[in-house]
Image (tube, rainbow, N blue to C red; front, side, top):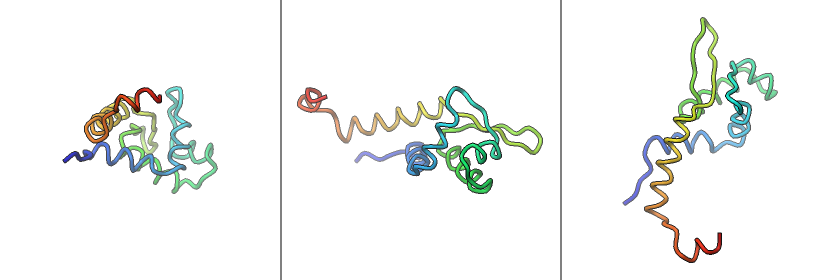
Length: 105
């Protein structure tokens, strides 16, 4: 039986929300943002931004660093690549491409 690992589960949970998907776009181009900056850009409450950033970090999509009382977030290419590789491996076992599906692409 094939099972998703914890990395994949957290990654998928983090991306399950359209709001979090949209927030991730704010980190394009190696952008680093604080909770307040992201809240302002996205037009959401500070507490909402904080909660969403926490889930994205837990999912391996973001990294954070503390500077005094301020936390800075940025995309985590290593975490994203790791989760995608795990998902790809699971999908290759559970749902391998067939010759027919390869032709239809």
